[in-house]
Image (cartoon, rainbow, N blue to C red; front, side, top):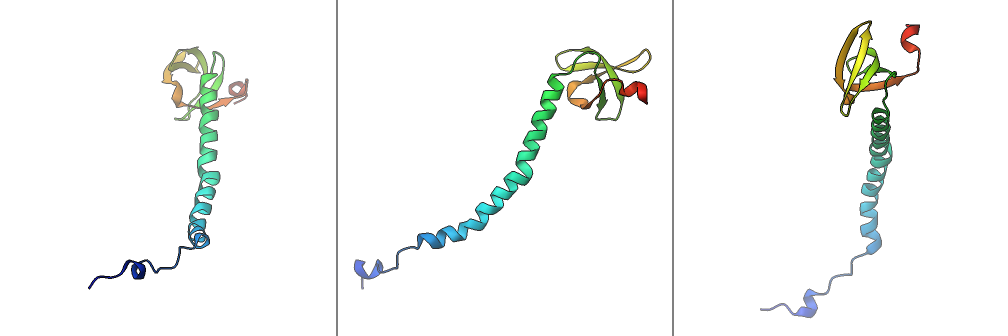
Length: 108
């Protein structure tokens, strides 16, 4: 017994609007996820990269470890920080967290 082709193809055509409404919540969740999480993180990372690239001698910074210091030397991937009088430490540029306004260290 063979099923005739006409009988096998007797299904109703797929409703395009119904399939779109099934995926609409996923699309909305992805859009919210992008605008609430991914985009702000990308913006912060870009600002951090620009700040690290613009470091120069004399800038006052805070490191990721919490040390406050003044930059005395800048190389390609390292900086030398003076954290006290005649005390200089060498750190990677990526360890710099915040660029402070000039004169902040004197005010502390």
